[in-house]
Length: 277
Image (cartoon, rainbow, N blue to C red):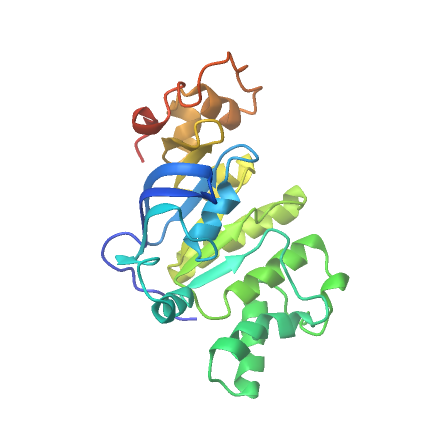
């Protein structure tokens, strides 16, 4: 996999984005950029819409309004064929790995290459082996997913996400369900992908240790106000953000008790905290 040349401007530019289902708004008024070569965190308490936002970013969920620019191109304004080409620049690791249980690990990794490339079977087999080697799963290609540990499933899913050499890697709760050692190994692997291959990584997570260890920018979503209430690197949010919900999350404290104020009255939206990066 060749290093990716960083383009001018952000990899992703999110402009006044609202997401949801039908009449139900999950998040609204989102504005942020994801710089090339960065590890960007989507943070917030459970149920605030982190994974829903990731689905909009990777093309699985049309937004209710607003724009998602991928390297300057409005993804949802493009036609279906153009979006399919842009999709090839995305790699996605789903929360549970999402491996096909009836396929071997190598067959799972090879699937995107079979579906979306014109390579012959021998080349696909060789590339699948390379991707598995990259995530530390040499020799595991013949195994079935049921035979893998939780950490191995995540790494196999990551190998599949890397199959088409994506410029943007999207990870949904990559360390969920892993013990601290396996989680740290996965963090190290994510850093290697960013530093060694120039990948841009967007990561949904509530794993505080992981967020603080590897992410250099991010956005914090709130379920009540249904928008972002803070922007910045997780470490800076921990050290400098005085929004009570963000402070509680970053310091593992009990969140403040709702006093009955209307959603959004806590200072979200245009008045949200922005911590310098």
